[in-house]
Image (cartoon, rainbow, N blue to C red; front, side):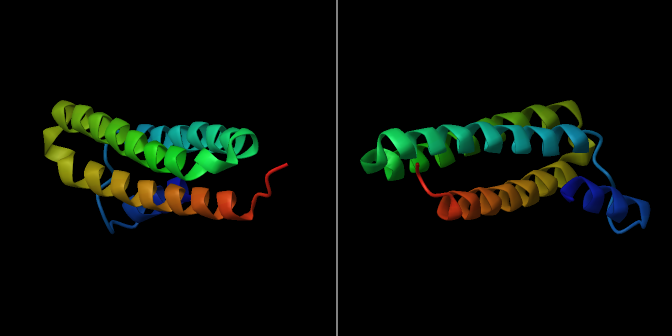
Amino acid sequence: MLALLTWAGAEWNWWPLPLFWKEIIFFVFFITVVIGYNLITIRRKQAQAFVQFYLLSITLKLVAGLAFVFFIIWKTPEEAKGSAALFIFSYLVFTMLEVVFLVRKEPQ
């Protein structure tokens, strides 16, 4: 849905489409899935340490994302604003989905 919204906004000339838009969305999606899966596993095995691992996962996701965005901005500096904005927007969307999933998912 996020990829469709990004593409549609560029097609209707609402904003320019960054060169690496697919990579940005895939990166944030992939890292969210990996961290979400690990958090579910930690929640089942070590429920008392879940909050610390969740805060650590947010920090690691942000640091990895910043390194990724830095690399993209270094490769295409003329698209820095669009790439950074897309990263921030997709980070917020996927983090909200992760939180909803973690709150609704019952540990088994």
